[in-house]
Image (cartoon, rainbow, N blue to C red; front, side, top):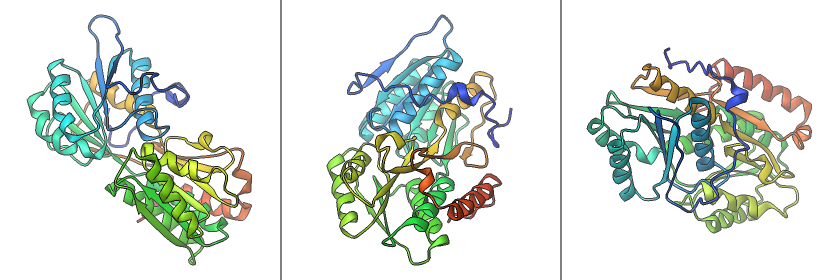
Length: 334
């Protein structure tokens, strides 16, 4: 089975576990589950706690999908600083884990260095761009396919012509998603101005709230974030706002602010994790960069059913036309 096109052969309805809770002891550094003898072992490293309602929680839901669908033994570690990366890699390699999902761009350099020391373990960097070793691959995120569509909604509905973006750090995938959001907005409203703030933090909710309040003070009436735990600050800032709407990213975050979150740009991570772990178990793993796009059903927009009707019909028709282009790999978002 070649994974370049990402067949996504496992049943989607069985894998999308977005309702699965994060571990109650989410402040702990390691959680694990056990299966039977001759275990297929899969681990997840995240840069933050999995109770963020977004990126890290989505990764944990992916691990849960692997455990459920493949009857795998699973393990999770939080590695908040780069000093934590190598000890975690070495520990999982020594334990002969079959697959280690390194959940973030920041893991790429160390994974590339350490992977050759553990040839029987497959390392997969999520949101990465490394694959130079035979047991190292990357899942390259193209969330911009979805954020372009959200930008169209914001650009067509804004009353102030000011939109805001809040990012944790200026990682390539984050910057590309915001560029696409702006391009989508200007495709329907050339007068739009998009203001972007990077927090230099994925954890500090107060910084996220301050950034959101600053953008609101500049009359932004649509906000989007890609800031993990810090992104919760955006939702907190707008909870009592009138005339303001927001968007979620990575995970479906509509339920965080059901009366204000118009939609979310979503990575179908539970399905993706199970597919790639299964490729390792079936000896079909390929060391390459795997693109995750709307064209291969890895990226999607989840509109909030409570608010979708607020999008004017003529605007939604344009959004649906752009979505059809994205699914055909013909939408230019950069």
